[in-house]
Image 1 (cartoon, helix red, strand yellow):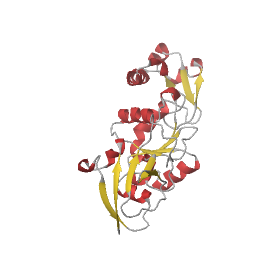
Image 2 (tube, rainbow, N blue to C red):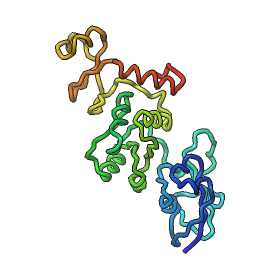
Image 3 (cartoon, rainbow, N blue to C red):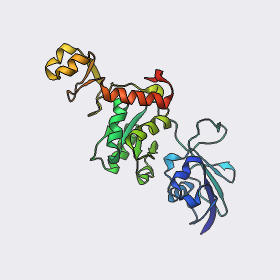
Image 4 (spheres, one colour):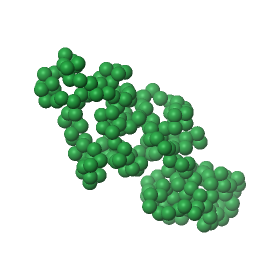
Length: 250
């Protein structure tokens, strides 16, 4: 057995017991243990980590620990320049697509409402989620840390909040998506891209009050659901403008 010391920084402490947060933690492990294995035994998915320093030098996840190593683990950096060291995270995906686990159905609908390509099914197994994430290059959103520890997963995020509205804002902030919002471009039921449809073609399908109040409508070619910019959207738009501090995002 070897002895090492490890410290986690910033939001990674979310996963650490309160009494151990922001402290140098002593751990004992077998010879040959990788730094990735150590990090995940501490409860932190590798997808949350951006930089690992061992004795002051940047190392990859495959680094095998040695006795008395001192490890510093950092989350994703937004403003601090770490260009001269090696990040352990893969490059960001050029196109943002999501796949959500069974616990995030309400979040899935909200992401689709804002135009994000979002796969969701309450029947997906962990294996299916992992395979689809890899095959279609999708970011997994989950509240299951065990899922994010799977080696096959390269892009994922543990959603901290339990409230669906807060979850939406958390994801938007985390991935800096305010400039990527395309409201009413996807069906919230099946994720299909929506198309605008003339009012006179759907008059028989809508209540008179809706026809009187709205003139712009959208339809889904897959499930035939019809949408309009009603009170639900106005409420979300107002809240997003408050959070972003800029109404021109929408």
